[in-house]
Amino acid sequence: MAAVSTVSALQAALAAEDAAIFGYGVAGAHLAGSTQSAAEQYWTGHNEARDALAAMISKLGTTPVAPRAFYQLPFPVQDAASAMALAAYLEDGVTRAYLGLVAVSDIRLRTFGALAMQGPAERAAFWRGTTQAFPGLSASALLLSRPSSASS
Amino acid sequence: MLLASATALPVLLATAGCRSSEAFTGPDPLAGRPRPSPEVITLQAAIAAEQTMIQLYKTAIDGNSVTARSRRLQPLLAQHEQHLVQLRARLVIPPGTPEAQGSPTTSPGAASTAPVRVTTARLRAAERASAASMVQRLATVEPALAQLFASIAASDATHAMALGG
Image (cartoon, rainbow over all chains, first blue to last red; front, side):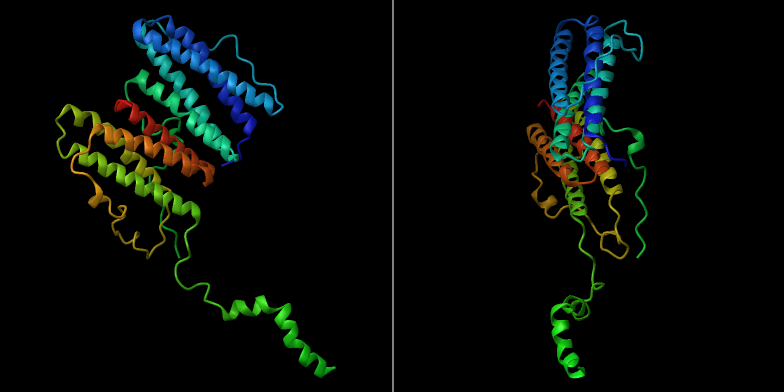
């Protein structure tokens, strides 16, 4: 596995948070009651995380990546069901991004990434209604079978 | 000169060459199994912990798959079994070792310490503790394994949430 740059991993997490902030704005418009309250709460949380990541990146002497003016949605969002699916999709993206931080060599940032990904993983499970065995991990990262025993 | 060399030789061996000579008089470097690396020990601990979690869920379900509680727990148990498959897949067991010969690998004392009745609160606490342990373990392992540990920890956190935590 190639070494992961700390700054690039932080920038990727920041980009994911920006995408989530945009997406929740779209999703929230199609939600009501407790789900809309949840979306507002999570939107606020993503804003706070975005600010924290931007500060970390600035501290490293790099300009934080700017949010885009528009993000292409993965599918049309027309009702509460598609809004909740979008919210789960966004949280999956944030989970993946923080998992990327776990691959850096700095142990403090690894731990930060591992803890930070638990929140979006929980929120994704909330929106989806089901939990997952490997949040954030791509199918290609999973081994299909045991490697053969090493020969002596 | 020869005499000087003859008398100087033991001195030279005693100072400059002593480490080399001890290599051939010390213990056989090929005798017995080499000690596992710290990363292997960490992975083995994670496997044992996952096996304990699985046993806890099986005890909680207690062979009764028809209740609403069991139906809620079954998917979480299935995910822990997937965790175990992936953890084991990363452990290469040398041939000729007890594990390679199919000996039981459950954590010691796991069956004897499993309570008769496992409450949802007990499962929730176990999930939270497991998530915390996996995060601690990932600090010193190689990146790909660290990401697996972090993903499993996140899964455990979602389980705790699903159990009402």
